[in-house]
Length: 124
Image: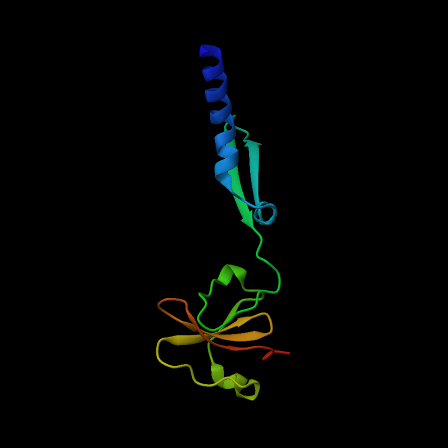
């Protein structure tokens, strides 16, 4: 009986991190960790660990969502909206600014990052 309890306890400690991770296959593909080990001339060993997150391609933005620049393709802040009047951009209200994400112009709140408006295809 004692061996059975120890075997079950060992199995749960080994399998619990796998069950607790809960990462889907898609999330595992988007995250990749890289460890680099270098030997310097003075005999020191330098270990660098880097995690790369790949954003999902072609993200669609909607009003009321939270804007995260990591998921924006071709992210640029539009400093002078007047240059893009022909592309339907207008003066941003106080506390907002225009951002380019791919071919879309997105009006984002400065404080919370909430999307106020999306002009899709503004930069085609």
